[in-house]
Image 1 (tube, helix red, strand yellow):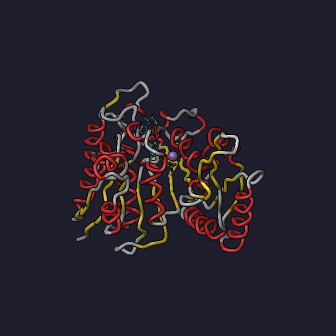
Image 2 (cartoon, helix red, strand yellow):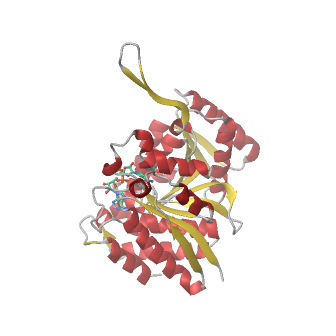
Image 3 (tube, protein in one colour):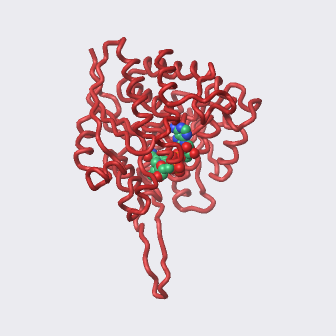
Length: 366
Ligand code: NAD
Ligand code: IPM
Ligand code: MN
């Protein structure tokens, strides 16, 4: 029988609340197949600052290194917002962990179940069958990491801050490969999103992507779109896309938009992948909800655990080759929301239940 060895990093805010549900669902879903979960939990983010003095302790990194995948919650919150920016949980834990494992490809499914179309702000007649697109976001480059990145004092005493957006062709090609592979497994269409009418990095991005697809994937349909138009097109007719493919910051912003048109931030899962293989011969990855620690509802037991549960399902699919069990988890969530079992963020007038009740409803339907 199979043993799944993964690191569990719940983080802050709603992180621990929804992680608790994900672990229970994973346990219940894998048990009938005789699978053992061998996970180790560790502090990350604000809780790690409180307990160890740093957002990403070496001991936490060691737990990750000894694992075949990482299940991550979310980090950050008001308690740590007044620390020096470089010490805050987002910049001192999440970005370094992505970088440490070269997790350059972030896969965010824009999946709105037909059973949940009423929770989308889009008119139901525009999305009668729900939404099924995917965003491939570059995750370890661009303006998030480029140097210089600093605040300096000018001669006249005023302050000036600089961030640098930078991309190399090799970084663009490796993420283009992920977009292409994703499209091959779906609708065979890739829309590359950039701002090539203004940004040098986008000019190189578009040129590199065009040459890459012409040479390696002529069978795929490649199109290009400016990011401002892409934001609009997503709200107008999301299903015109198959695979949306873009750089780090554009992907961050567009994926929040995708999350809300797909019902709620509480529904959007993600996988961050590199090229390293784990002990199962599958991609090593970090799996996390696209959303954050939701300070406005943390501690109330009302957060939607689905994004965390679906991230766990992605972990089973990508890092452990257990796509069939991932499908069953997804089906259980669909069935729950179809029967109007919903947390507050997707209730819209229907009765809202809490995080734990949602957990029970999912497990009941597995
Ligand atoms: P957020 O995603 O935490 O919250 C935005 C809105 O979505 C809030 O109204 C929140 O209640 C709602 N929401 C998010 N997840 C939900 C869920 N599972 N169920 C129900 N509602 C949910 O974004 P924010 O408010 O901009 O950021 C809060 C903190 O989280 C900040 O410190 C931010 O830096 C951090 N953050 C962390 C991550 C991460 O660790 N991956 C991602 C995004 C934001
Ligand atoms: C996300 C988050 C992070 C990002 C922040 C918290 C650093 O918003 O995962 O989308 O911008 O990548
Ligand atoms: Mn984000």
